Image (cartoon, rainbow, N blue to C red):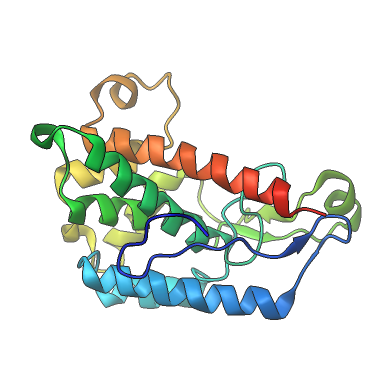
Length: 220
């Protein structure tokens, strides 16, 4: 597991057999439930959002959706999204604690943007139907072409606004989520993102590094 737990936040790697291209279903279900409890506990402890949002996202696959499409990326397995959100939250809190107090973000803001920044991925991926692509490219999921094209940050904000939670964000939190996945060519995102946004970006990078390392260590 990863070091540093906050109100029960704990992340474990999902058991995946790279050669056989399958997941231990029973263990995966157990970890999904464990992560769900940790996620919901953190949502409540830090007043991250109103219940409406999580209840809606739950029906859309929040706790079973992956974080990406390919094994070469990160957390491309059932439950990978929430697993990623919890790990990002751990790193965000650690990074925030390293900063001088005068530029440090509040713990509540750090947890809120970390747990919500990529909820826009809920419903974004569908299981890949091509055995060839799964076995030869590690393509486990495909993009849901029925969705309107948006960045993940934009869709995350959209989900909040349309589920009675738009007013839960401060302007700083809004900017952090909106900007986190914009390209470096976006000057506003690159040069005018607040401290909270920079913490989030770095935490995501570190979480992905750890996830890929665990994937390599646990792959058979």
